Image (cartoon, rainbow, N blue to C red; front, side):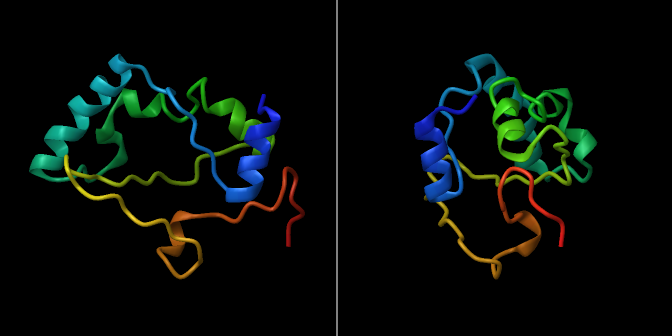
Length: 115
């Protein structure tokens, strides 16, 4: 369950940073898939990403946040990732619909009315 500070930050910023979600073994397992794919060529199908990525979909440290924010009928519409090399600068945040509009959804409250 989200605490009051997390609710406030999400309401203010529209996102949360949840620290220490993945342990070292989980990060290493993901990197074993990412590093060769990034070096050679990106995977062409999401299924090539493997079981470690599938476990992220309903990760026990994240999924309760999704249920609280979106309700119990959460679904994964599509996946998206940003590959960065060591030493790459930070990417800028985008705040409007003009930037890659297929990678975001507008949050309108826990049980939004359909338009």
